[in-house]
Image 1 (cartoon, rainbow, N blue to C red):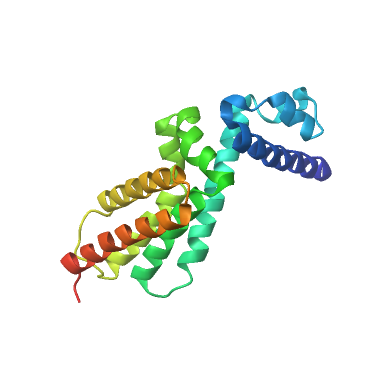
Image 2: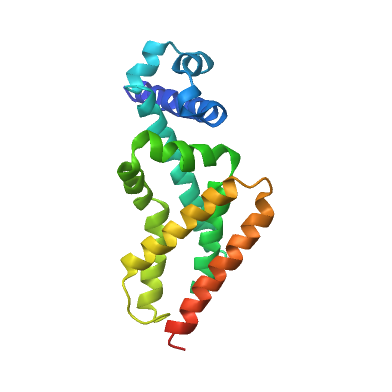
Length: 199
């Protein structure tokens, strides 16, 4: 029984990896379940055994991408002990990871369109937005700024970061665009700190 469960998990992992490659290269509409199953050395019926349809596989891929991005945010934020610097490092990590070739189409373009805006936002709230909320809540409790709505701050900054990532994804030169975005985000949070800080 345990071996069967492990084999099933390995099959699912393989399908997600192959599916991710196809969704990245061809987009959701252009990706073929038959080709995905073929590359994964499975029949189409075996694929349907694990995922009800193409959208089901795509959602699993999207969750994987979101988890990887969230993990990157946590790793980068931990590089500093300063709460304000952690916030900026986390913001930069999100934008950087979101525009990577293997992520941007799935996360930013097809994701909201395929699963629907409300579902996509709900998934985001469980990953990157959750981390942002936790960081801002910690900063508020640490008296980094006067009491304001952490919910409002989270949604405002998250929206800015998502739009920034979409803009950068369209630019031919990501590095320069990322520098410009991080300059703006830095001014934003530093301005907030100066206006509301309790130094």
